[in-house]
Amino acid sequence: MNKYLTLQSTLLLLLLTSIYTSSCSVRKASNTTFSFIQMSDPQFGMFRHDSSFTYETVHFEKAISEANRLKPAFVVVTGDLINKPFDAPQMAEYKRISGQLDPSIPLYSVPGNHDVGNVPVPNDITKYRSSFGKEYYTFTYGNMLGIVLNSIYLHSPQNVPEEAKEQESWLINTLANANHNKYKNIFIFLHHPLFLKDENEADEYFNIPLERRKKYLDLFAKHGVKYIFAGHYHRNAFGKNADLDMVTTGPVGLALGKDPSGFRIISVSGTNVSHRYYALDSMPVTIR
Image (tube, rainbow, N blue to C red; front, top):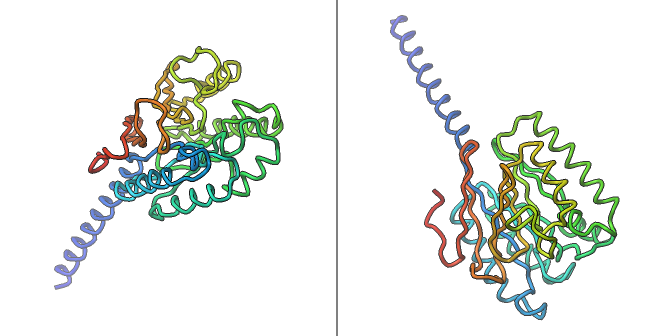
C-alpha cells in the first residue's frame, strides 16, 4: 500500500512538473513572439484647422477599437497627438479616447512638433511634461527594449540646448546599458524620421538635418539598433542605412498622400521583425 502511494505521488509530481514546465515555455514564447501597433499623428484639430476635431475623433476611436479587438502587446503613438500645442480641448479628447484602450494593453505616447511646438522654449517642454508625462523614456516587453525620444531635440533644438544635451547623454547611457543587458531587439520610437528614403537626402521639414542625422545614425549603428519607427510625414515611407530600417508610418488622422488613414502592425519573433500598414477600413481579422 505504501509503495502504491509512493508511486502515485511520484507520478503526480512528474505531471505537475510537466505542466509547470510547459506553462513556463508558453510564457517565454509569448515574450519573444509578439505583435504591437504603431499609430501616428491622430492630430486632433488638423482636418478643420482647429475649429473642431470631429473627424479625428471618429478616426482615433476606430483605431482604438481595432486595437482592443486585435489585442497587441502594446500600442505606441508616434507624435502629433494634437494639432494646436497645449490646446486644452484637443488634449482632453486625445486622453479621453486613448483611455478607452483595454487597460491590459499599455499605450506609450511620443511627443511631436505639434505637441511641444515647432521651435520650443524650455517652458513648452515643462508644459508638455505636466500634460503628458516624460518626453523621453524606455519601456520593455520580453526581449525588446523600446526607446522613446523627443525628436524636436534632433530637429530644432536651438532654444532648448540644455534639454537636448540631457536627452543625448541619457540616450548614450541607455544604449550602453542595453548592450550590457543583451536585449535581442532595440526599437527607437520618435516623431520626425531621421530620413525618408535616403540617409543622404537633403534637409527638409520632414526629416532630421543631415549633420545631426549622421551623428545619430552612427550612434544607433554602434549599438546594434535595427529599427526606427516614426510618423510626421502623414504618408508611409521606408529607407535603409546599413542594417537599420527607417520606417515612417502614415497617420490615424488626416492623410496627405495616397495611403489612407490607418496604423501599422509590427510582429516580432526572436530577432525577426515584419510589419504592415493597414487602412482603418481594411483591418485584418486577427494578428498573425
